[in-house]
Length: 295
Image 1: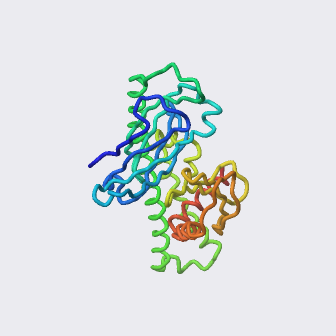
Image 2 (image 1 turned 30 degrees about the horizontal axis):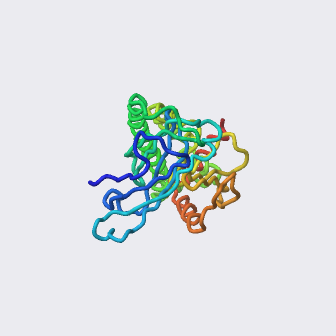
Image 3 (image 1 turned 120 degrees about the vertical axis):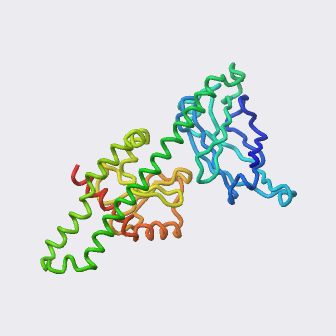
């Protein structure tokens, strides 16, 4: 498969901030989309920003199967607060939905003074490559963890529904008792959940405390319950679109935004609501709120 052709910046070179970013993207590499992502990390692997970049058809794109892009990568507040002139950053180019990255190390020139560092040290490049491999390994573990959690909750919900349909609970006339039986079925996976958390402990701790409240993902959105939040609501986050929205529980209605630069389109709100109409997905959200009440 053809690789992306980056015209600017050149790897390991000095480049002005904001970084001009240009080149050609092979159609096959894009995987059926006209967009790709660039993560920007500092020399210690700290996340600075992520930017989605659209590609465009050129005069010969129909025959070459390549699309051009030209944009500026703004490191934003990072250049004001902790990136200094001569800082090494890594541009990590990846396809939508992929973890594989093409890494371009550059030296930032912030302001008019040229940095004393002329090329990126090889040890920094090697260290970044090692961190990328480690991140990919842990992200794969988190994917596996999410899949197992979903299967666990879906199995419990199906167990309840199946038992109810087959008349296992027909002899129970007391509604309060019936509700108690359902609650036991829906929370009896605590030991299994604890075992899963322990098995994937390394990945969960790497992701940080907010991951513990993550109850699902869809179309780039992350659904999470913060343990220190007050009131029955959860957060819908989108890193690339810089969205942090509050949705009510159990109604799943948009309540407000928290410092967001953008809003969620109405069609995406409908998709999020539809997502939580699925009992296994709603069950995960419900269980997370229950856990928060117990802590």
